[in-house]
Image 1: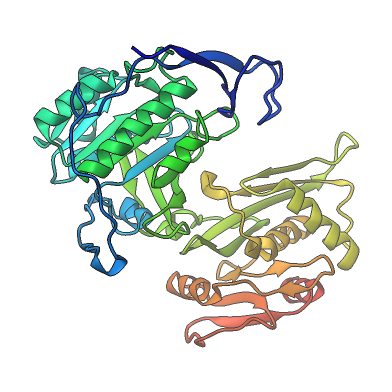
Image 2 (image 1 turned 90 degrees about the vertical axis):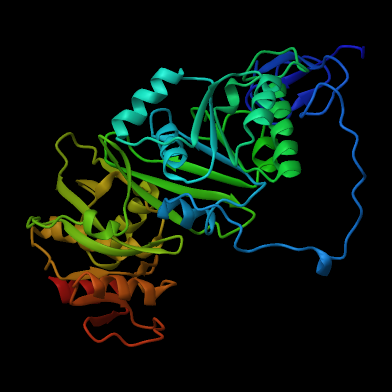
Length: 451
């Protein structure tokens, strides 16, 4: 039996230290080092209790390697297929993170029931009866979805050998533990070792593995940073639990683009994929001032979103600046441009900004729509419902062009908008037929055209 070794790991970032010290060298946090056992006994293979003898791999010329491009697994979820790049790649590992209660387990259970392949759903947080109750609430059932309550990886691999599934789902990786590490489940060494075992299993058997990962209070995936390096794809499920919409973003993808985006609507019976989110994110009966429509692009997907602004006199002397779904520092910048370049005195007024639907947008192309909404509320003049905006506002008050403008124009034209305000020097590949493009060069031109 090998000698037991211990080391000190930071519970915040996973950095390993030879001895205990007050501050972590990696993340500079204090009192986060804990002692963990890094080796208990000689390591064997994942498949049996004894190492499996196999031939050593030989190097191949890249033109001799065969790959079937049609071998991706269809999840029967159009949003997830889009985010993954066309489906799940055999032998890949996908890590799904998100806030507690956001819908990670619901999404994976829907995939397990909808797909036509054999799925092993391993849960360390819920019992089989609880999972069955959630499946009944969704109104779906399947004889290809097998549920296992187990947290020991050696026992899990024994069940995998007997069942031979086509897809393995683990909810969650923080609940698993292996016999080769003596530390508790959820520790840095346990997460790293369990992930390593499933990574070896996925690559040797070409069986895809989906992992659920917890996140910290800062929004990062809990555990060592190497967890995100080991897996092939990192997905982040986000959204406000007080709103209906959930956004599935991809942060890393070895088999597809990282610019894709999936949108879901949380309902009583589960998650529903939203094929046309623009119609849901725009109010149909809003006639008050302070509302404008922006043509934005999230990843490769064009969206039409509604921006609401409220400008009122500061009651308590100090003006308030509050935003929901928009960068507060960028709002302050736009207010300074309006005061300096357009002559609007907003320094003594409260400004509240909200992006409807509970989503967060970082696209600078919504700057002009934000300015229009603020001016509409300040002047108490309602903007026409058939106009939208797609341009960036610079510090000198100039209207700057934005990328992927043709996609924004097509989305606005499809939803029935008649005018689109954009930068004067914007480049357009195809001139639209059913929408009028209104070029603007300075912020003063926008004020004169609208008010």
